Picture (tube, rainbow, N blue to C red):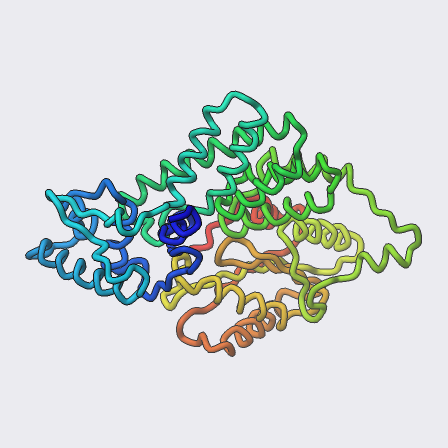
Length: 420
């Protein structure tokens, strides 16, 4: 049998970033949830491979957290179901792919050989980390990083054995990309490193990988793209985690700001570049740093004109008045609240997201007695989406003025106690 025909009989098992199977060149269907006991059993057996797994350990992995009268009988039922499932795949010519010998369950490697992405990644990563020749090392590091497509069996991340294995692969990946970063920077191969760091950001939202992307883009002279990465990272950390940009990130921002040059030569070109690219109706939504700039400008103008302005904090709360934090639909609620604020307020008002369950609004040219009318418009618009009785909005209003201590604390990191 030639090499090509042998390759067609190999079952490709992918477990990094998700679970999938390819037999020859044909992807196999997966009609069951990855968290079902039968599918967990399938994944455990495939991962154990020709070495197999002791029956007691298999039972512990599958049913260790459950109180079963007869775990062994339950295992036999799932083994039977798995055999039936494998037969329905119509790929292995009615071969019994599950063997039980000398207390071990194992995959029938002789009939259906396996090739796992975890093995390929591990061997390549270990070889790359041990290689001493710079050229070979660089190629192996890049290959290993590209092989890693995400966490090991992410659907089973809560299982102890999966978490242990996942940590091993994650460490290998982090070691590889860190060494690749040092080596590729030294060789000034920024395009290659940019590709690897962009992939890394898609897997882990680590600041160091965003910084890696920004450094590569700046080294390539692509400062506007670097600024976009900065804005994406800053928005994510602030809106999702409530964290302000680190000093390292701010330093990159200062460097980029000094380097960005605009080539418009006439005022009409400049004006065109300043036009809003998003929805122009209703209140103006901006990033938190942009909102701070708006606040400063409004306060300065108010000193001269006497025009009143107010800060309004909108917090989503449940039926008992407690802030929503853990609701699985919180992102959907926040999207609807964003739409309600944009629709209910005027074009001269601006707002930003403030944490995972709040929006901060800057109301310009409004008197305090009219703030309740504004709140009513936002609430009515929000409730029109069908949330009546489930959740509501709590409002806090403060005069917007630089000398106002409470407003300053709200904008710069020491929020008042909203529970009062």
